[in-house]
Length: 327
Image (cartoon, rainbow, N blue to C red; front, side, top):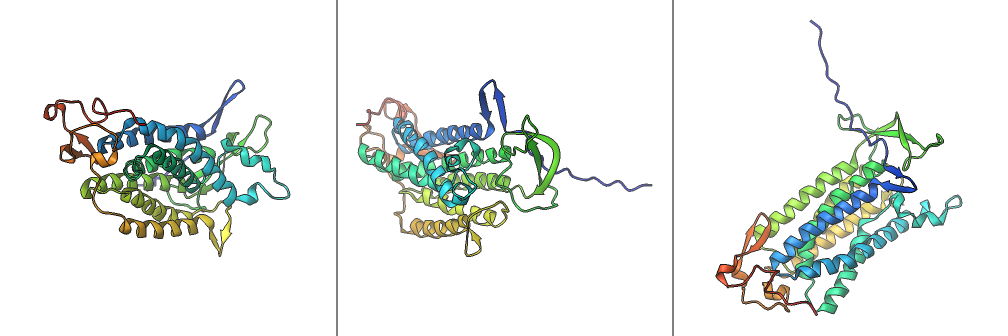
């Protein structure tokens, strides 16, 4: 009797990351970013309203955070990978071609945070409750957006023979020229590598769930959920960066993002323990709202607090009839 062996197939890369509809290219990278933004907004809206926040502020913040975040993320990428855009054989104009990929999360978080902070300062609304509400949404959006790197065949790790290795295909354009971002696969596998993009997707989803659980279990507030997000994400990003094999700017023998992750992790842990314990009341979350609903009227379920029904107060749920427009 013969012995049968089963060989597990590697994870495939998509055959292409761009689809042309006439003169209009549809890029999977951009679609993943958009899907991540929408998912993050949905979760943020639920969480901020449940805390007693004005739902209109979520959309106002999005109008500020999305463009500033994308600009900041691109600036961070260009600065930390400057040798890809400012070398003797490079075209500096490529630094503006954001559709080709290349976004640094910390540049996005920093510039978006500055923009949202200015907005909330202008509206005279505390930023802490919103930061805590948005934290799980950010990392959920990161998980979905990271799939764009799969379509672009980028952000991968070292060569490996593990069963879940990712196959990188040789892609060519219509003229047969090598085009890793915009071309179609020939079916030829040029490398089998660690799918570090997938490791980060799974890690981000895990941290998203842990943030929601911790927020519910310990009733966190005053920016502590956001601090946990920074600590949790950078902890994963640190070990994932150690596995990557694509070109990057190096400092003291380590990738620049490895050092950035370490610094942000230490800072986030310190900030978490320095911030005030407890959670803000609904009136503290939105000082402009008109309501006789108190913090005792909020219940927590599945990581998101929900206001009790109108029978207790003769008015609609928080976020509807008991709100006034923000100044």
